[in-house]
Each structure stands twice: as C-alpha cells, then as structure tokens.
Length: 196
Ligand code: HEC
Ligand code: HEC
Ligand code: HEC
Ligand code: HEC
Image 1 (cartoon, rainbow, N blue to C red):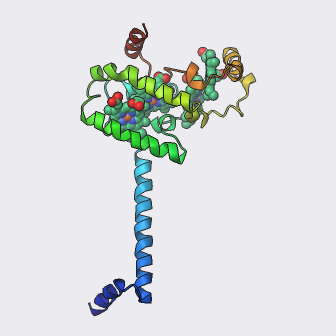
Image 2 (image 1 turned 45 degrees about the vertical axis):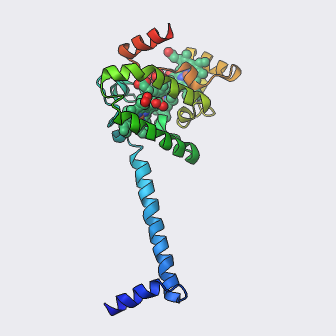
Image 3 (image 1 turned 90 degrees about the vertical axis):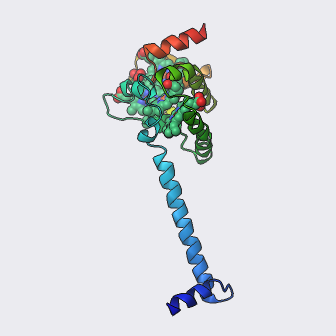
C-alpha cells in the first residue's frame, strides 16, 4: 500500500525522475488504447454487416447487391459495400466517415424506415453517389480495376470499343456503368419517372 502511495505521489511530482517515466508510460498507454480503439472502430464501420444494419429495406440496396454480379460471380472475388463507397485514402476516408453522421441522423428520423421511404429518396441518394464517383474519377472502381493493367484484347468487342474511346472523351467508369449493383424494376421505374 505504502509503495503504491509513494508511487502515486511520485506521479504528481514532475521533478522526480520516476514521475516523468510514469507519465511517459501513461501517455504511451493512452496513445496505444486510442489507436487500437480508432482502428477497430474504423474497421467495424467498414464491414458489410454494419452497412446492411440500416440498408435492409425489402427489395432495396442490400437485396439488390446480393443479386448483382459483384456479389455472385465466376471468380468469387466479392467487393463489399465499403470497397465501392468508402475511400482508402486517409483524408477522403475521414471525410466520408464525418459525412456519415448525417446518415445516422437521417436513420434516426426514420427516413429509410420502409421500402416506400427508400423509393422516395433513392433518386437523390443515387445522384449523390454518382456525383461523388464522377468527382474522384471513379477511384473506388479503379482500386480493383486497374486500367493500366487490363488487357483490352481479352474484353468483349463492345467493351473494347467503349474503353478505347474512354481516354479520348474524358469519360470515367461511372458515366457508363450506372445501375450495375442496385438496379431493380422497382428502382428503374422511379428513376425513369424522375428523368422525364
Ligand atoms: C445508422 C444507419 C446507417 C448505416 C450504419 C449506414 N447507412 Fe448509409 N444511409 C443511411 C441513411 C438513413 C441514408 C439516407 C440519407 C438521406 O438521404 O438522408 C444513407 C445513405 C447512403 C448512401 C447514399 C449517398 C448519400 O450521400 O446519401 C450511400 C452510398 C450509403 N448510405 C452507403 C453506406 C455504406 C457503404 C455504409 C457502411 C459503410 C452505410 N451506408 C452505413 C443510413 C445508414
Ligand atoms: C473489390 C474489387 C472491386 C471493386 C471495388 C469493383 N469491382 Fe468491378 N469487378 C470486380 C471483379 C473481381 C469482377 C469480375 C467478376 C466475375 O468474375 O465476373 C468485376 C466485374 C465488373 C464488371 C463486369 C461484370 C458486369 O457485371 O458487367 C464491370 C462492368 C465492373 N466490374 C465495373 C465496376 C465499377 C464501375 C466499379 C465501381 C463502381 C467496380 N467495378 C468496383 C471487382 C471489383
Ligand atoms: C464510354 C463508356 C464506358 C466507360 C467510360 C467505361 N466502360 Fe466499362 N464497359 C462499357 C461497355 C459498353 C461494356 C460492355 C458491356 C456489355 O458487353 O454489355 C463495358 C464492359 C466492362 C467490363 C467487362 C469487360 C468484359 O470483357 O466482360 C468491365 C470489367 C468494365 N467495363 C469496367 C470498367 C471500368 C473499371 C471503367 C473505368 C475505369 C470502365 N469500365 C469505363 C462502357 C464503358
Ligand atoms: C461494386 C460496387 C458497389 C458495391 C459492392 C455496393 N455499391 Fe452501393 N452503389 C454503387 C454505385 C456505383 C452506386 C450509384 C448508383 C448506381 O450506379 O446504381 C451505388 C448506390 C448506392 C446507394 C444509393 C441508393 C441506391 O440503392 O442506389 C446506396 C444507399 C448504396 N449504394 C449502399 C450500398 C450498400 C449498403 C452496399 C452493401 C450492401 C453497397 N452499396 C454495395 C456501387 C456499389
């Protein structure tokens, strides 16, 4: 007990050698706990489970993803939600996580409570995500599909034509590949109606 008291006293006596060491140790421990908590939080909020916890309206986002060719395919490589929607780079990733606070608020307001409510918002949600990808030259697609490495000759003729022209007319992936993951007849109806 005495030793502990002495140690604690020492902790508050900055001039003593021991207390500085203790402070450094304490600082390092807090730092380590902080970093671990941060990393675990970042990793968890990137899981499919976390995203589908909210995007689960029948017939909507998670369900359409489960029907898409990025979920079920020949090779078994499966991008999850965050692969396409959350940047890898530190700055943009942090910004996306901060923006996500708005999603939590919107969720609490019940804005995506039902499929009907999802359909009321889907046009704007799509638009925001498409614009985000246009602005960053479809960076999240390019994290997997490296244009410098793909072999055009192995692609379908149609794909070759369009991909060849992509360089000249300043188009990016999302300009042509929309509705690839979350489209359904239900969504198409709403999107087409909004476009008219
Ligand atoms: C707490 C619930 C919740 C979680 C968890 C959640 N979202 Fe959302 N998300 C929402 C709500 C609600 C909206 C609708 C925002 C609005 O329009 O007001 C939304 C909108 C979106 C949009 C549309 C684009 C935009 O800017 O509005 C995308 C893309 C999206 N979420 C992706 C994700 C991904 C990826 C994850 C997992 C990393 C995720 N969400 C986790 C509730 C959530
Ligand atoms: C985590 C990696 C990953 C990410 C991120 C990713 N893809 Fe893919 N994509 C793949 C793989 C792997 C395949 C091949 C699947 C197969 O075996 O058919 C594929 C297939 C495709 C195909 C052809 C199959 C089809 O459905 O027509 C297109 C087009 C495509 N991706 C476009 C995109 C676009 C656009 C984005 C960004 C919004 C994107 N991908 C993001 C890995 C990814
Ligand atoms: C100018 C329009 C256009 C742009 C831009 C574009 N694509 Fe495509 N892409 C197409 C078309 C059209 C096809 C053929 C679809 C089909 O066969 O039905 C295709 C096919 C593909 C395929 C399948 C190839 C195959 O042989 O099966 C992949 C993968 C793909 N695109 C990925 C991308 C990625 C990643 C980007 C951005 C780096 C991109 N595309 C940009 C139009 C485009
Ligand atoms: C292969 C890339 C890819 C994956 C994987 C993916 N998305 Fe998307 N998502 C997109 C693109 C691209 C858009 C823009 C609209 C479009 O093209 O249909 C989009 C649109 C959305 C939207 C706007 C509303 C809607 O339904 O279109 C939400 C919300 C969303 N995604 C959430 C998710 C969640 C949650 C997951 C995982 C369950 C997921 N996405 C998986 C590429 C992806």
